Length: 131
Length: 70
Image (cartoon, rainbow over all chains, first blue to last red; front, side, top):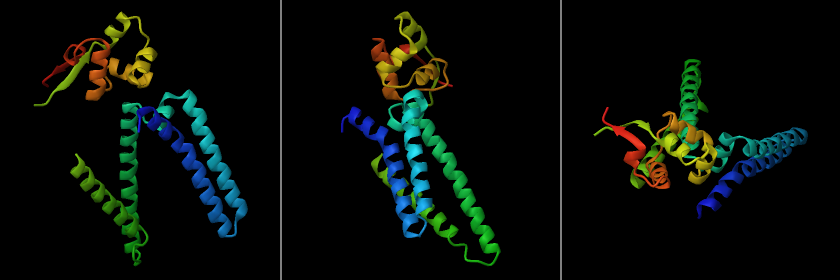
């Protein structure tokens, strides 16, 4: 895939995924018997998609996050994801400890922490084999 | 061997050619903010971008970036 095509695909990925998730929310809410909530969720995701496209035109940072061309912005994004993942992991561990202390199994936090840990290890192995 | 980038001459080379940060950013395929961050020493570019900058200014990486042992 050429760089310009890859850039375009990345650029449109954010609004496209927002639309896709919006439709998934709509379907889920409709199946759950709450079509109005589903419509609201879809509208919110459409607003997010539109906002990303508008901001992408005026903000270099937003455009960089979307099209992944700028190595510095991609690096900032990766560091922000690392930080957010670390906070999420601490929350999962804390919630697991609290649930266990209350005499419960710790689910679903134990499962989420396990998915997090196993995904990390699998990713590390794949990256290690490739690099 | 550990090396650090102690400074660079990107701003001098850019202004010497009468280019704006936005024009250089466009030529390099990065944002204007990234060119500014490189110029003020807040961001050390990847090897690929450092080489691209050096080639753009018809220079070498060592001439554009002041690389030293800490």
